[in-house]
Amino acid sequence: MRVGLAQIRPVLGRVEENLKLHREMIRRAESERVDLLVFPELSLTGYSLKDLTLDVARTLRDESIRRLVGESGRIDLVFGLVEEGPGHLFYNAAVYASEGKIRHVHRKVYLPTYGMFEEARHFARGRSFRSFETRFGRMGLLICEDAWHPSAPYLLVQDGAEFLLVLSNAPAKGMGARGMSAEETWYGLLTNHSLLHGTITFYTNRVGTEDGITFFGGSAAIDPFGRILARGERFEPQLVMIDVNPEDVRLARYQMPMLRDEDLELTAREIERIVKRRSEGRELP
Amino acid sequence: MNPVEEMLAQAPYLRLDAELTVELLTRALREEVEKTGFRKVILGVSGGIDSALALFLCARAFGPEGVLAVCMPYRESSPDSLKDAREAVEAVGVESVTVDITPQIDAYFAGFPDASPLRRGNKMARERMSILYDLSAEHQALVIGTSNKTELLLGYGTQHGDMASAVNPLGDLYKTQVRQLSAHLEVPESILKKPPSADLWPDQTDEAELGFSYLEVDRLLHFMVDRRYSRERLVRRGFDPELVDRVHRRVVANQYKRRLPVILKVSGRTIGADFRYPRDWGL
Image (cartoon, rainbow over all chains, first blue to last red; front, side, top):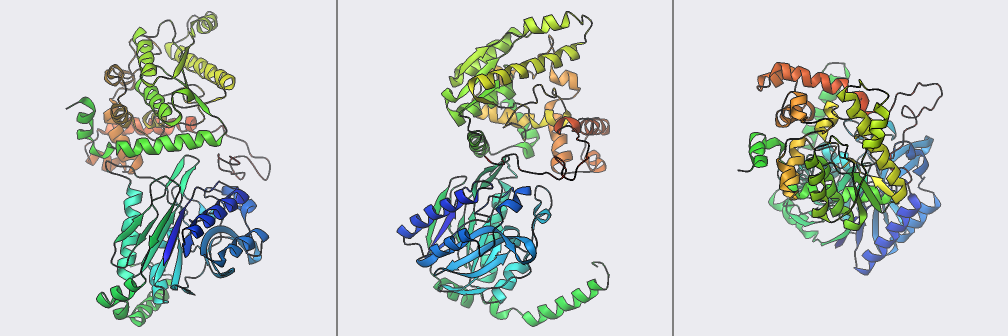
């Protein structure tokens, strides 16, 4: 299968312009025979929204979103938006669309609200990690900070995911003598997830600058042996393309059978015990 | 070893990936300016290392035709400052203008003959700001800042003076890092070498006025600000407790300079408190 990582530079707060950007990238990817095109987190809106969150929110029934979903006739699409859900709750969400229909929606569970981030001020928290079936196999969606919680990919993989799609808006920071810590940390994280869970992982990170904060790009594909197959450029808009062989998941999971050997029941028992203990108001040991 | 390398050897944690940092700053600067619809930038060039680095970054981001450098000497300014400023301007080949601020400064202080050097210095800094913003409108060029992280944290700058700009590419670089990047971009040697000075009165140097060296305070600020060491941990690491306290007091006392004016809340939606938009809103 050929996967495209749409490393774009969304325009802050301008949904119409970003839709246009999406359509251009879709045309390009189609002409390159891409099967699955993955956009970054909040690809329709930009990141540093603050009070713009209300203005850029769209329901999944919104005409413009339907039209974009309609573009998934020949190519599967994953894009990010501020989703206005039932009860007027606003989510940082990612949509998987195929054959003109929405197949799955993931609402970001872990909303970073510390340091430079303030997502929980504006977004409601998602409540599930579910894998879903696609024409290429079972997949799981993660949005940026979700990938910093080991339980998130764990649950997706236990739920059958063979591919992890990580949509990101990761800022360039932590500059040192050799490169940026933010970048190294991300690749370390993704490599570990792929290796430990035997998944093919696709990471799309945006580029561009908002309020002085620059997103570093460097979108990547990583195989189940933890090898980086492709890496997008830093800071440059780009369509990163990778031909992957899903057969690698089968091979990796035979050679490194962590999924087979994982004791899910033990994990569940222990988690239940810990939850009970902590819900009784006892603190962490 | 050259002086910059010597400094970084003493403080390896301040060392930057120079090439990558320059690329990041150049791209971010270009994007932030172009988004506003401006095609040009303008900045004051003093002959010091900060404005020289800002000038070199601007030239990379916008090309020589996209930058207007302004020299604004006062009659007591060191003649070497103007010479160094011109050398920096020539090195990047941008257009420059010189505006002598002596007439307006002298006319104003004729009414206040006993004004302190500090008061005079601050007035000069604001005079320069006012000239830059006037020329900014005239040339449709955005004002670029030249305040580094060290002076912003210490409050070693004039509010609404040299601290005023639309985009500041140096605000997250300590002085030592400004030196590293300046050397990397081959800023003229005379600028790299001379002791930093606000040049607000004859023979003034920053380090004599502050009472510590930039390298010393940058090392301290790195652990105090970036790594959030407690006072006790800073002292354990070998920093002089008196310096720790002095610098900490300065950082706290100058917080007001780094923020917009206080607005007294009356309504349900107050600018800054619950009316919050990105600065790049609508760009």
